[in-house]
Length: 435
Image 1 (cartoon, rainbow, N blue to C red):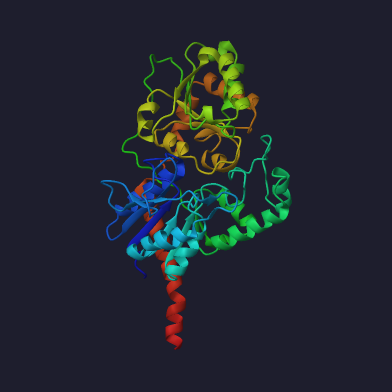
Image 2 (image 1 turned 30 degrees about the horizontal axis):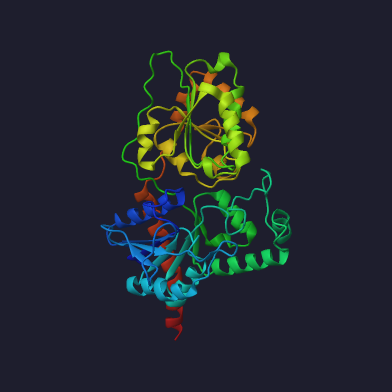
């Protein structure tokens, strides 16, 4: 049996020290998990850009007191083609890292800001190196931030084609979208294998033209020490009536749907004990019309809602102490939001939109509840059900399955790397035998 590769380079579009998105955390947790396994050494290369100041003359930077972690400064990026315009620095600095480290595996957890050319650079520098790509959303397929939501509204997109994409972006000709599709897909096919945290995302990429036999579903791993006990109730008859939203406040996250639902729940059901707690920021970066809509909904909701601002993932165990339910009202497909794993790790049932990776990860009536995407009326019904059924929280909490740890996730990846290495070795062995 082929042994597991010993040297892995995990590549991410951001470092958690600068950017706390779910994909960055997932990539960093894989890096840490791989280094927990004897015989494997992982290094971590993360893209940074403005406002981080680069070193003159080189794209390469380092984090002090962080062995094996490299920063790669890249700002010359073509968002349409997911391409790096600065091919000179790829040749000078990215390939220099590859030659210095000589990894057995290069695992891309994203290529935003870095460019898809990085995959080709790895293959050209080390033809036998194992290249793995993890998908976190649909950016390779959809120019609209990878959301697959129609521009100018919230209508979900079910397929991508040059004509459909031109309808969303009339200023971009269908021929350019066709060239984008061919360019992106041709560079992705350089990879040996693709990883997705959800079956939903696999289906979308297969429909788009990638080979299903080169996909595997591996859930991202969590690095949390201990679960937080259930919220201490003030009396034996008190309700599980504290709801929470965790995440950015953007047009696609459905916070407006959630706020509208909270204002519609009858007073005799809501009572004095119920509360919606919103942990998240970036509202000020959204379009003015959306900001005004949120502000009006907050005013209508009154003291039913409290805003706590942005948070760090390290704060999650403490924040979970004060809540009973987590709500994900996203109006786009989502893939595998880290808040699902975090909530389940701490034993909190979830209420979510009934689409994409959310509906796949949260089983209606088992460990959470679904509501029809974008429907505040349907969400009202679910929240009324929660507030009116005293035993529902206990039943759903008991149905939660413990999420994958970062060490278990790393082991699943090591098994994948070994399988790929075995498959790549077979043709060479056959050629040697026939020589």
